[in-house]
Image 1 (cartoon, rainbow, N blue to C red):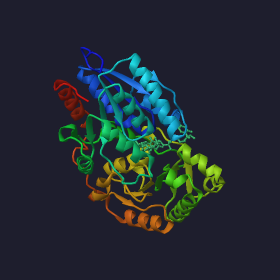
Image 2: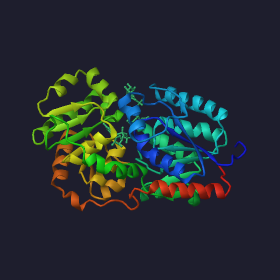
Image 3: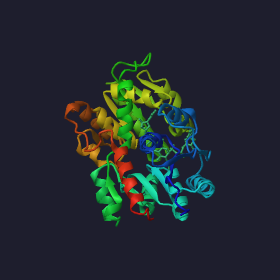
Image 4: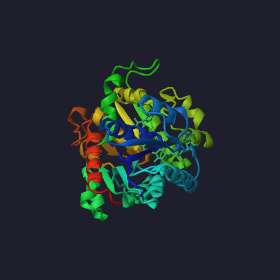
Amino acid sequence: MAEMAARPRIAIVVGARPNFMKAGPVLHALQAHGGFSVQLVNTGQHYDEKMAGSFLRDLGFPKPDADLGVGSGSHGRQTAQVLAQFEEWLVAHPQEMVLVVGDVNSTVAATLAAVKLAIPVAHVEAGLRSGDRLMPEELNRLATDALSSLLFVTEPAGVVNLKREGARDDRIALVGNTMIDTLQRFRAVALATPRPAGWPQRYALVTLHRPSNVDEEAPLRRILAALEEIASDLPLVWAVHPRTEKRLSDFGLHAAVANHRRIRLVPPQGYVEFMAAMARASLILTDSGGVQEEALVLKVPVVTLRENTERPVTVDCGGNTLAGNDRDRIVVSARTMLARDPAEFRVPENWDGRAAERIVLRIVRFFAEGASL
Ligand code: UD1
Ligand code: UDP
């Protein structure tokens, strides 16, 4: 590690859509504390205005200190690009800590670059495990947590997972959920946002982007069949991720969905618009990680189109059920969740909008105790 600066320098790394909501509150809380010099590094894993730029702006980020501009690529290439470029930046701009969030390729790559330079890493959203090593994010989570010095956890299962893997007790902190900090900050403005023209009054909201659902034709067709069946009861609004947009076209399925009378395809939504869309929905069908958590707090029932979830608290609290990508199971799960009373969904402890404050307090103690790797 470079010689300690008067105010410890902390680089916060963002890059893909779900990073911005998780990192924003920590960046703002560190700045408000005043005892740190905070740098923002944007890897550019996501680069479309609707996947990255709008979030930087709408969530009140400063202009990044570095834009690595890595863009899309295979897992190896994308991870390697972040690793090489972030290492170069760190060498030119020494830091006392690197803070990463979530489980995307940028997360693990930035972690590796930092620890190889003997810079401790703090991982926000540590300990989540789906148990599915075919899921690219699971590999990113395992590697990031194994190398991180501070492990900030959102839900109790994360603590259990980290202890089972041998993480040091004093490095684990169950602090709550910074994605929910962001939700609390923007909730009122989202709820005041009018329904977009032409959207149905009552609808189910859909998001899909997991490779296991959209990269092969057979599961995607099964999901489409389920969505068509559900749409006959309840119209759908589907905010289409660019990966999925591409696959629908590759498989020649796009026109049929786009022309469906009761399915409305919309582009990726801005943060506030999407929160408004979630809050107004009767049901959410998704394979997103973050959406499972946000929907629970907004008290909107979720059917998760996956066989597992690294966020079991959302199921335990009553707001989420797993349906895989089998047509009939998705349809039955949708009916089951629509029949539940959202008023009975519980909100996990510490999902109260103050997770970032707890993170800052723990980081302060980390430096007071000597900041070791
Ligand atoms: C990535 C993350 C995933 C996260 C998701 C959030 C990894 C391994 N995956 O998946 O964990 O849940 O982001 O949305 O890190 N594309 C665009 N414009 C963009 C970004 C992507 O058109 O701004 C298209 C490109 O064709 C690209 C494809 O989407 O090849 C996939 O992007 P990529 O970042 O590789 O993975 P995601 O599916 O977005
Ligand atoms: N989101 C958004 N617009 C959309 C879809 C999602 O703002 O059209 C937000 C969502 O509210 C959550 C985050 O993006 O805050 C989740 O990102 P994503 O589903 O891409 O990734 P995951 O959580 O699965 O890693």
